[in-house]
Length: 84
Image (cartoon, rainbow, N blue to C red; front, top):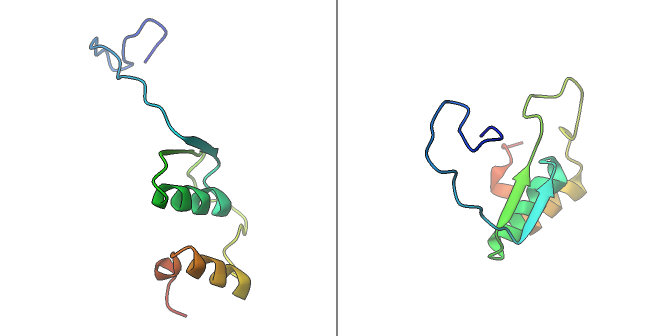
């Protein structure tokens, strides 16, 4: 939408209704996504925002230590891990 309520593609229909969330999480890294998942499974309405979905050009959490694997299992996310 631009400032006058018109969608950028030229659509002049009314803007969508505002939605409310129980919590907003800024950053879809390891902690943000795990927190969003956990809160969502508890029945909370979660908004997860990430400014950049491109793959980083550096190592950022690709190595999971045993403690990280245990925490993923505790959160019910161990099925998302690739086989060793």
